[in-house]
Each structure stands twice: as structure tokens, then as C-alpha cells.
Length: 278
Image (cartoon, rainbow, N blue to C red; front, top):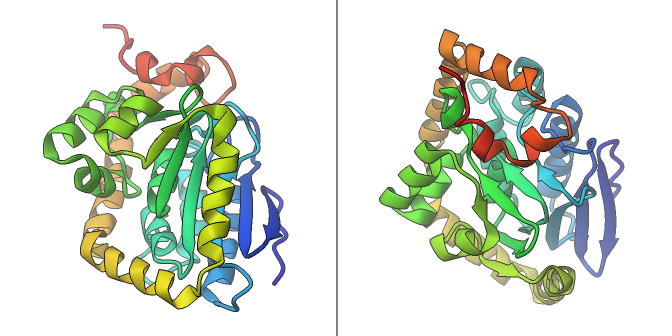
């Protein structure tokens, strides 16, 4: 099985595929990264047995993935549509397919995972994060939108109603300890221990007979994942809200201050979305 991508670094070891997102300093979810993720997921569905666990991580120490590329929504959506059938032209439906891939998936998060980057992590089966360096957030409400790629569905199920509304409507950043306490992630670990812990767990699972893990994942997914119609509805709402004049005004203001470029605004985006003048 071959894994050759322009924006994902891969290595296969003892049944574990380590897939490091490598799409610029912010790891924006844009055309190239979505194209490569679609190809990776399609390959995993071929179920040849080479891979039993996938660890999704980042080549950037500061950003697991900042968010989607807001300048390329129609173009990355067209790439995401290649993963599904008619009516599934959305990042959310591609991530829904990722959530049901027939191997175990683990997100290992260092740095910031916001917006679509957080939704990518949520589509994995488990999330482990650096206590010192990981930040999680769904900032879309601060721009007049809502999470459109599964964030609403996952966070409502993981956090419960009250905390999900806090996280989504509040649009603030969550450090790893608070994310762990809320149930957003599995565990916050000391940064020095994160790599070793995830590798041991991944190789432990990969060493078991695979059918048991596959059956467990299918059973849990059937009990906990959203219905496709709900994911599609969120995607439509996200794209319609982004087109509203107030949302465009806020996004243009943030772009003028450094949105989608490495710098202070992206590092503190949870704070920055609340600083719109007027």
C-alpha cells in the first residue's frame, strides 16, 4: 500500500500509519490538504490489512490545523465532494466518512486546532493533546457563522447541551486541561510524554486481532455518530451564514489584521474574534 502525498508526511510502522499534516505553518484545511486526505481515506477503505491504526498529527509545532482556508471554501468543498456521492459536497460529509473509516484513528494534537482543524480531530476516534501546547476552539460564532463540518454534532454529544453551547456560541479557546475536563478530548498529557503514549497505544491496538477493534468501532459509531442529514444541514447553514454581509465584514476585518497568516492574531484567535470595533 502506497502513501505519497504533497501535504501529508507518512510513515508506516508495525501496522500504525503516522500521518503528519504538512500544509504550511498554519496547516490550513485547503485544496491540497483536502485532496490528500480524501486520497488517504479512500485508500484506508480498501482494507488491505497493511494499516490497523492511523495517528493524525502535525508537522507544525504550533498548529495542528488553524482552520479551513476561508479564501478557498468552494474549491476545497469540490475536493471533499470526491469522497462521497450526490448531495455530499461538503467538508462535513467527508469528515463523516473519515469517522467511519474501518481502522482506528487517533488525533495527536500539539498547537492550535480550531474550526475545521478541530472538526478534523473530532472526526478521529480518540484525541490526545499536549497539556502545555494544545488549544481547541470553534471560533465561527465570532464571525457570525457556526461550525459546519461536524463540530456541532460532535461537541453536543461529547460535552452535553450546556457546555456545547458555551464552546460554540462563546467561540473562545480551550486549553488542553479544560478540554479534557469538558470531555472534548480523551486526555491532556505532558508534552514530553505525548509522543510515547500515543505510539504505545497505537501499536498496542495494532497488535490485536483487527476484527475485534473494527466491530467495537462500528458498534460505538452506530450509537454515537450524527445522522448524515444533520451533518449536511450544518454544512448548508455554515456556507449560507458566511455569505451574510455582517459575516463578510467581520472576516474582512480579521483578514486585515492577519487572519490566515502566522502571527499574533492566529495565535490568539479566540480573543481576537471578540474585538470587532463598533
